[in-house]
Length: 148
Image (cartoon, rainbow, N blue to C red; front, side, top):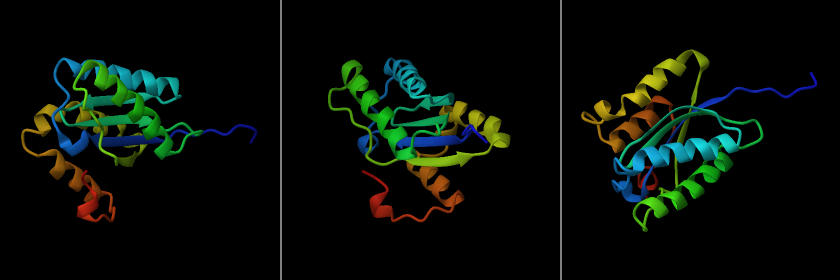
């Protein structure tokens, strides 16, 4: 086979540093569009994105030429810089992130989950939601290292 082909979907979640509610209704659409644009320039297709006040859910493809860590870094750094231009000057993303594989057959379910964030977080905090993902995906973690 002369070509290298891949289609990998990821549900990426990361928060603001210390989960501070830095993202406002004014900065939300700007930051979402900026992440989509930066990602597109890296060959990443965004299936869905929702910026909460203290965290983001991003459903995207993983280009075959990037590692997950490189992809996240190449999106978090410029989007953090953008946020300091349009929002608080002391804005930072948390150091870590969570990324979860999504099968083609579950794309619509995850898209709806992401689109329903506002309603979802009336019943569950970000911390509860994130730990639920770690449990559902069987990820071993030490709680003292999950948050920063």
